[in-house]
Image (cartoon, rainbow, N blue to C red; front, side):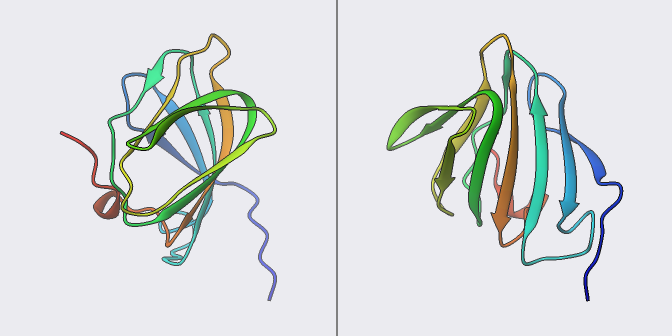
Length: 120
């Protein structure tokens, strides 16, 4: 049966500045533990702690630039591009450019605070 999500759950993300997360599907929004799908808006200069999550994260940038650091490389993902970070890989996201970043993130299985494993 089809389900329409008329209003996502709003969550404030981790980091040095306020990042808005609009979760459409996931543990918070729908109780779904298999997947989380959210739209993100991070301001210029936003930086979150590094993390080693227990989920694969697929990200598509809609606007601005998302800066992604991993042990294997550093990437500037621009509007229209995507990046996938595998579970168990250390990663840190930021939006250092003046326009910030808007993007969609899909986590498999769903994101939870207990499975993200943020750096201290």
